[in-house]
Image 1 (cartoon, rainbow, N blue to C red):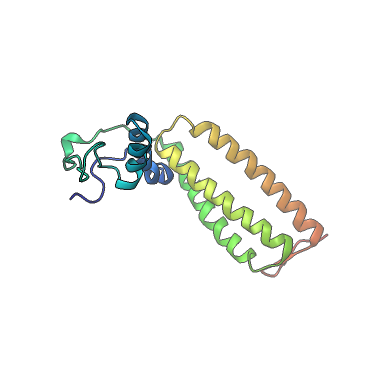
Image 2 (spheres, rainbow, N blue to C red):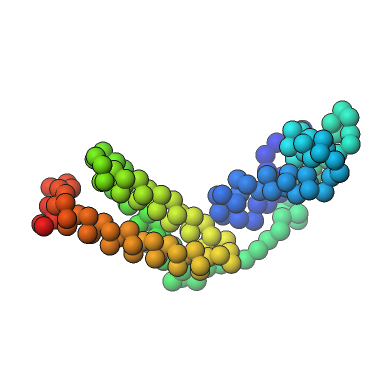
Length: 171
């Protein structure tokens, strides 16, 4: 029995990495005949061979340097600096959102939305490191949502005069 990753994921994006095994199971379920075999693809796991009883599994060769598909993930220096700044922003903003979750009402929900925005930030970093084709559109959506979120935050703080860490924004 082989446990763990038996081949290179070829991704730095965590969602893609976690869903890779499910993608293989779904693809295999699409190729086998009959509802029962399709069900057994999910029930017996990724190594199961359709039509075998007791369940037989494919032999999975160990991952070796020669079997790993290599791809170039070299990023330019400005892109690396941008991603470093984006990671720093996401980390600091997530901490600030955590402090805001101690508040009530609108401040709490503003902080929850901020935490989700930080998740989108990390997702964008993963796509960028993979040199994925969705990198630029996702970065544009991220920037637009960030601008809307930032403007809403400024307006909210000015209207409510919320005190945050002894800093009061005058109304």
